[in-house]
Length: 175
Image: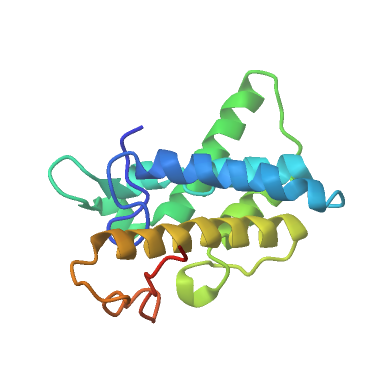
């Protein structure tokens, strides 16, 4: 998968979506043992699927930009459509996925940005949805921080202002 995870913010390079998905799966596997009451299968399904629609949302042949469906529908809705189509296809072949499980997975996808102003049409309402939201945000933010440090051209101990993070990043390492 060569798709980027975003056009501008985090993991915005070829293979970024695969790296982000891999990272979120590894983070989930590391965190889940601390929360045995959280349904691990739902979290793992959620982190694996949450950005799948970005393969339809973004184009990356010449430069990173949005497809028409990316502009009109967006990756969250596109992911829901993909999940629904796959569930229907499986049902036609005799494997029906329980509607409650589908609702829970779709809820995780719909809420993974965590806030309305960040594009989520719903707010997290399950422990699993909260966990996926925070895991997704953690990986995205750390990617932005490390990218800001790596791309800084000045000799300053601080990066330039990072608009997406709303701060400058301290670069001086402890020796």
